[in-house]
Length: 457
Ligand SMILES: Nc1ncnc2c1ncn2[C@@H]1O[C@H](COP(=O)(O)OP(=O)(O)OP(=O)(O)O)[C@@H](O)[C@H]1O
Image 1 (spheres, rainbow, N blue to C red):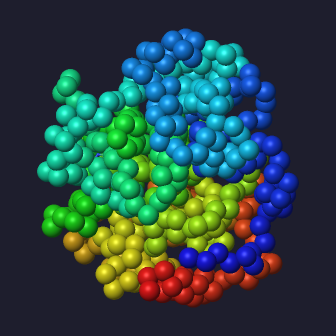
Image 2: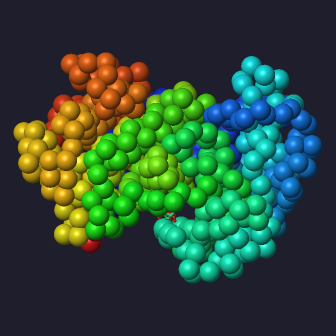
């Protein structure tokens, strides 16, 4: 998909990108935290707090991790044909020395709190990650038996497994596809770097990893699988109370990633197949393969190539590659529409849910919008709030979309619903061809149609 260069983007980012200001290299994962200080610099990459973390020296910490990061990095280094840190993208000009790697990986360690961090010489390790041997994963999954295959995406096969202590896990095996080894390694490190830092009930939980015979993430197993299979792949109708609970869970997870996490994390691929469901239908945001973190002093990030899933892509992203929190807000709006209507983001006739739903939302056409399988079995107030929230989240102008904190309030019916007009944003992302206002909803729908045809041809 081509990126048009006509959009005027915020000066700060252009400046950073032109001048390559230290500390503003565009990061993809937490492992890619640009080095701004000396070798003793050690700002933490933590997003959450681990349970009762212990202080230890880096060496002690690694030993406790059954092989730990050192063996992972050593094995990655062996696999990589390059000896430079460029295996982790955008950190070119940076030698892949053991010392530097230690520093980067030190940032995967979770401090008790920021104040307790003494500047990095004493990083603190979360206990629970494990560096698995391949044999352990093979035993857990019965040699990656196809009967244990529970999911397959563009980049990975996911197997159900059982560890010797009885814990049921999901083993995500990164598959070889068109990507070069180097790119797969960096994708893996990027996903690992992010997933290892997040700590929230509505986001994926990392149990461990393995870099033997390929790359593997070991994650908590979610018994109900993906929202996609539940909503679209089952003959049973998913009841509204569950749909509403799922919507709230995803919104809370996104609020955490965008605002409450130590780093601003943009997921970039929010969609029904990336939402997993626990026994009691608690939603977990999974698949951080495309996720990016944004430094605080960046308004947004410009990416190429544009990756993600058609039907969920915001206009400023699919037209200009602009990524910020509002990218996820838009996708969340589409997901809400899927929950309300029971229709896919893009259906088998290649019709966009957003294009179909927009006029119906404007006229509050419940009869047409609400999933017919629900009949009248839904709470009207919740449904109204979900529709209102969806309609503001899918606004074609990113500045008109609310932040996730406000999205949650809208969904819960808190904070009044009168101030839907956006406040001037500190992080104004996109100015399209001179004026936001000139870029009307009609233009957007035309663009969307055009891009859809191009993408699906
Ligand atoms: N922890 C888990 N528990 C249960 N099922 C899971 C788990 N993780 C993944 N799956 C299943 O595997 C599928 C593929 O996983 P995932 O989305 O992580 O793969 P991917 O190749 O990165 O996907 P994509 O093509 O979106 O990049 C999911 O849609 C889900 O059905």
